[in-house]
Length: 134
Image 1 (cartoon, rainbow, N blue to C red):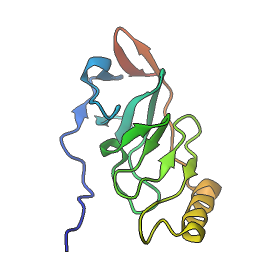
Image 2: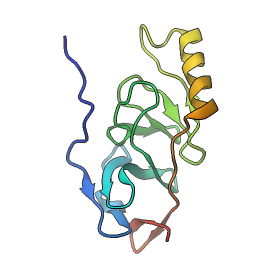
Image 3: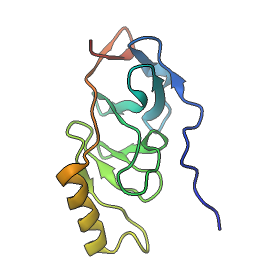
C-alpha cells in the first residue's frame, strides 16, 4: 500500500520576514516556507491576496504547502478539503470514495471550524515578495 508523505519537501527558507518572491511561487500558487519564528507555513497567493497559514491539514495532517489554489481557496493535496486563507475556515470537507461521503465530510468540516481553523499570519506584498507583517 502506498502511503502519502507527511513531511515537508524542499521548503523555501525565509530570510528574516521575507518569505518568498512572487516569481518563485509554483503554478499551484502555494509553497512550503520554513521560518525561524513560526516553523513551516503554507505561503502563496489566492487571487490577489497573499497568505501565510499553518502547513497542516486538519483532516489527516497532509502538508498544505504541497497543495494548490483552486477557486480562491487552498486545497489539500490528499483529499481536496478546501480552506479560506483569510479566515482559516474549512469551506469544503474532504473528498474521495471514502472521505467524500457527505455526512463524514460535513462532520470533519464542522469539527475543524469549531476549534481547529488554520492559524493565519499577517502578510503583505512588497518589493515583489510576500513578507510577514511586523
